[in-house]
Length: 413
Picture 1 (cartoon, rainbow, N blue to C red):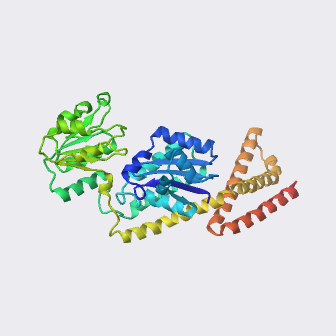
Picture 2 (cartoon, rainbow, N blue to C red; picture 1 turned 90 degrees about the horizontal axis):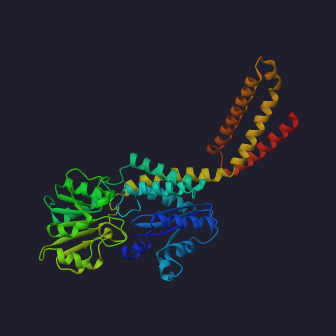
């Protein structure tokens, strides 16, 4: 299969390295356009999340690593950066994507957000016509497979969102969070999930809100609101500060935080963004604890049975995709055979049409319906060969059927 991917993720690169290669939507589209226009790939999908940056290719005629290096790392990329890259091709790539959609390769084992991210990456590629039929089928199959796994197999033991995992781990390490004052910077999906999980633990929660978003923002019930520009004025009263924005500037910087905090009070700052929202040097301050997403990784551990079941189920979808991929090159032959049979059927029924008392329009409609029905019937029968024969056997049978159909068409003429 001429499909491949290349990327970096939390397994190969630290958060300090990953944040340099996070791609905005505009940058993703720019890269996909170059890969299609300059590198002549048949299809391209770019996936960029907090934990990974990946480019998926169909029919790429050059090195995947070269593409990634130039387009993501930049023309001046150092040789050492290539150590971050992982390349997968063919069957390995297809199997990996199926597992990726199930959350098997996520920092939070079994998490659900990656499935949404795959859907969004596919839809963006569709919108700008960067996806071809191969990647379209591969991603759709992976999404369907992930839904099947999540319905039939309980991969994770509980809620698998990052915010839930963070709250759970903070409680294990620091005790009951009830009554703690928490500020959530950012009111996107991650921020709202964070606020909702904190409210469930009976924390006192405030979310920041930019002035221009006041009319559109969704604030969880029971959550207070602080204008983003006034966030530092409320720092002193907070125990926990969570930041989850897409900003390319620090939402919390060291000098401002140091000036506004209450000396001698212990603070916990949790950074949920890449690039990071909280200036790294903040952790140099006394009584301040800073955590990023890598701190909250959660591995499979005792989920071996579920992993085996998941991979067994996914293998069926990998096989289904491989079968489709191999058979797709024979579609034109199937169409040719169907068209020949349709013409033969039409020729054989010429006298029948004339013997029926129909208007010219009715006769043309009947002919059209008969031709279409014969095409569909033949196509369905031939495509059913996929469930009976190996691909090489299918090729031989189709070649023989095509020759037989052509001979029959010549005889009818």
